[in-house]
Length: 444
Image 1 (cartoon, rainbow, N blue to C red):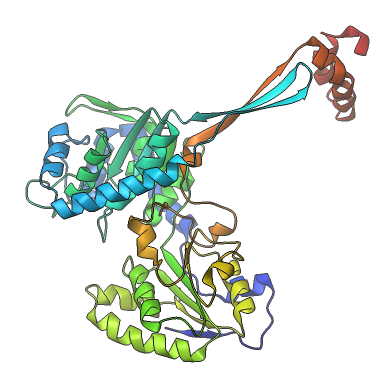
Image 2 (tube, helix red, strand yellow; image 1 turned 90 degrees about the vertical axis):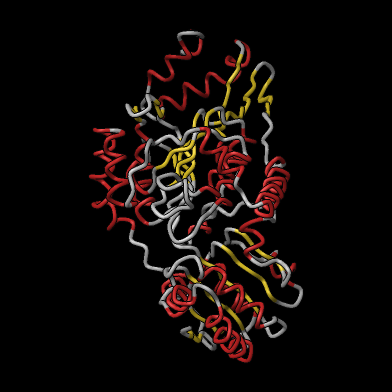
């Protein structure tokens, strides 16, 4: 891993952000590639989706909507230990997300005048589950659970058809993903991936193969590659989106008390996702940094996806950042705004409480990111690329809309009407004021 030595240097926020390792993720450059794909889906519907599956996934599914019997068969064939783990993941996610429900609130502004904020779920959502270098049944859980708890009435899952899947499932999404859908009671699942899946959800389509219709959705959530992110950007406005998720990233803030083997294992755990994954260690201990490098050398050689991990760790997006002290380290991690931030320091809870910018914070040596990926109960669909300074991870709130309901009687309008007329005139919008004086002529 490369080393960025910031000791003895005082940098502004702008300079810090420019200096820190970051993955190159040019969504804008991918727009010209996904635009014709999305337009083809808009114009030709299911025919375009079948053609895109053949072109990008190397397989043509029998149908776009996965039959109920295929989903049921996937659950029947699921490894019992995997089923048990998924059920526990679902249970914990439901516990955490149930506490995120929003209550309607009514404010009495004046006698006879109230404003109520009413929380209403999105009518229909499309949940995207990637299926490239790895299989992500956990992402089914993370997308579906908050949508269900929010009260979304209609939800559909899309995941790429697999060319080399387990026997009997070629052309369908991976059977473990289908099994996770079954455990969650989701029966509307589509074999479509990439930018074309986002377009399919946005525009809807009719499939003559089996006579099914996929109605357009209002919102699409879920992580994906750069082409999925580009399609989200392109179609934003037609649909709502959660975020333009980039490559996964982990930052670890550690001092001399950290266990270098734990730190190395956690850096590798995120590098395993993708050659573009970012793993960043921020520390005030040069000795710890050296010990972590030593542990990495052993662990990387032994891990299954060592080539992918080596590429990620040696890339420009990863590195060790040396700082003078924990104060400087906090400045660095707040500037970096990592998707996942681990705190391996003395009094880790106190240090974690001072972090302002992170998608999720993992406190102490016993809370690795992989716990959050699967079974902490938290959500693993998180902002990347520094977006944690202004955005949150997926939650029940992501699927809700706040609607203000204004209820004023005559007396309440009379009390404030003159102010409305005055402000309307100040903005040179007299018709606004006339909407009041039509009801209360004496205010004219």
